[in-house]
Image (cartoon, rainbow, N blue to C red; front, side, top):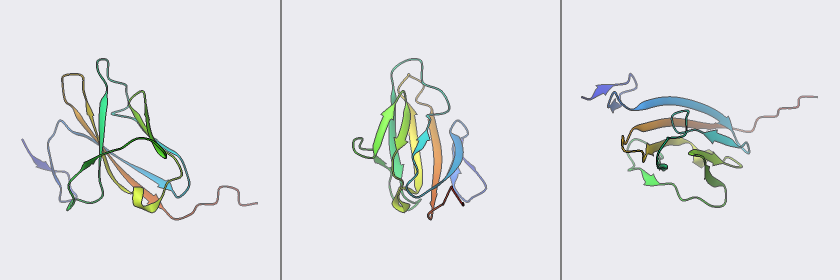
Length: 110
């Protein structure tokens, strides 16, 4: 079954969605559905926009996976997009995280 999630995107109801705002140069942790799968691991892919096909996330450098969580160091504007994690536990459940990277943010205003 396919439905519209309100943003014009058609999605399957078993997919899990959430959004994550972040800022340039921060480090972000994107858990796969909020929990580590009990069996197997996870596969991550990235889709820059709805018009571009998702591609596998290649780890190393700024992007790494630990316990199923995707960790992106030193965020850049080009990291904005949809990250898709698929559990390799036999269920194949897909989790979607929409990451939006905003301009520089100064934490210490003093």
